Length: 127
Image (cartoon, rainbow, N blue to C red; front, top):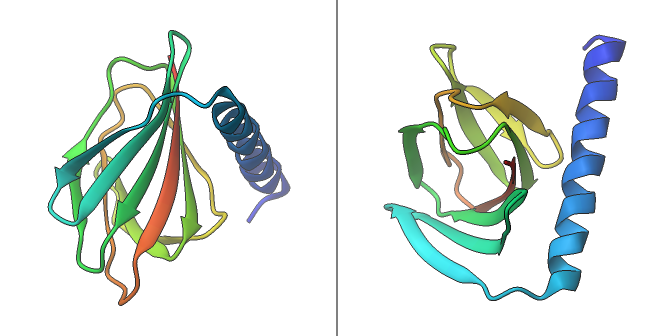
C-alpha cells in the first residue's frame, strides 16, 4: 500500500471516529431499521450536514448494491468482523476492522458478511 493511501486511510478513520464521538455526545434519538435480510442499520445522527449509521450484518447478511445521491462523501469503517465490499464494477474485496473506505456521491456499492460471526460497520455520510 502506498504511503499516500495509508495516510488517506488513517485520515478517513480519524475523521469518522471524530464524527462518531460527536454523535455519542449529541445523544440524538436512534432509529433502527432492517435494510436487507440480515442487515440492521441504526441511525445515530441525522443532521443537515452529516448522517451516521451503525450497521450490524449477520453471518450471510448482504446489503444489495445501492448508492447515495443525497450526500457528497461516504466513509465506510468496519468496526468488527469483516465484509466483502463491492464498489462499482470492481471485484469484491474483503475489508476488516479499521480498514476505512471512502466513496464519492453516486458510487454503487454493496457488501456481504461471508464470515461466521456478526460484523459491525460505521457509515459516515457528509451531506
